Image 1: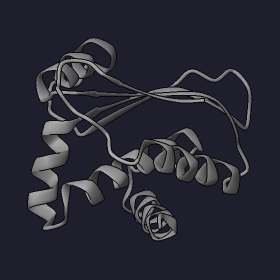
Image 2 (image 1 turned 135 degrees about the vertical axis):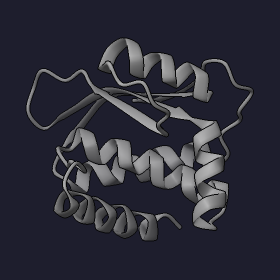
Image 3 (image 1 turned 180 degrees about the vertical axis):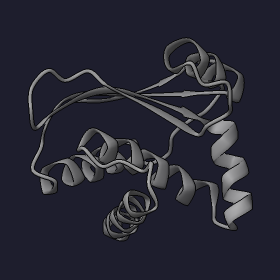
Length: 138
């Protein structure tokens, strides 16, 4: 089950069912089983507080992923996404807000599938996976 929530932003996700189906496809192709996935759309301020409180990081970010699964190959988590960051990043990377949002949505799923992005090599693999799955969204 995939759920979408708003915390402190008035944001309406377009194509909800299509996005859910796409994310389920990503999870299955990565060899995982979906249990429960919650996306929480919020502001920079809200996500900054989450970052400080739970990760001890005092900086803005576009996404924070919490893996709540206690079993291998099971997807269960909460993914917080700053709509403010998504909009700013879309401008910076010269892509649509919709495209950048999809990139961030799949980025969170890929983290739950075990992909990291701390080193340059990990980041390259993450980007190639994002690009691959973005192409599958039709």
